[in-house]
Length: 160
Image (cartoon, rainbow, N blue to C red; front, side):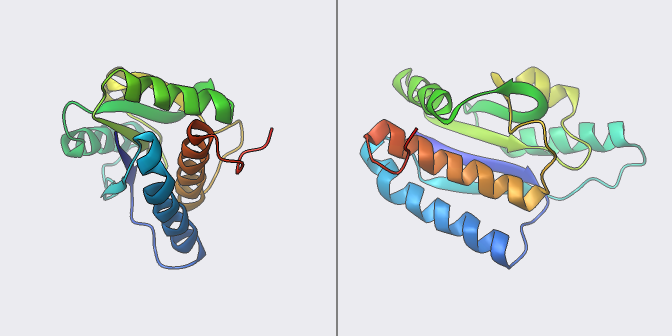
């Protein structure tokens, strides 16, 4: 099952980019053994609309236009459901086992997701109650994808 990390804005060169690429590469390795990956990055530019609501709606439309059909959509949102790493791995394993060909894991822009994205998402998850900088959120999602692959593979990376 292909993994797509869809987000608003470019991840600039530096520590966050290096960490993201580190985990993306690791997913490409162990993910093959459990039918996950590779991790593809998909980005859209931040909207320049006048209000926060208009920006969120515009960014949702741009992201949805780029996410290939029939990808399952998992939106990360502050109001989403919190999952343990094990539960996240089970979710990905269940999607894979159901024959899902690709899953888009979506991070909204600074103003969050527009209603169109929330309506399209099959799952809405939270990265926690804290607010993370956008680049760091991408690293966290990439690391959790790698962790999920190791959990599904029975690899000792994840110790609970």
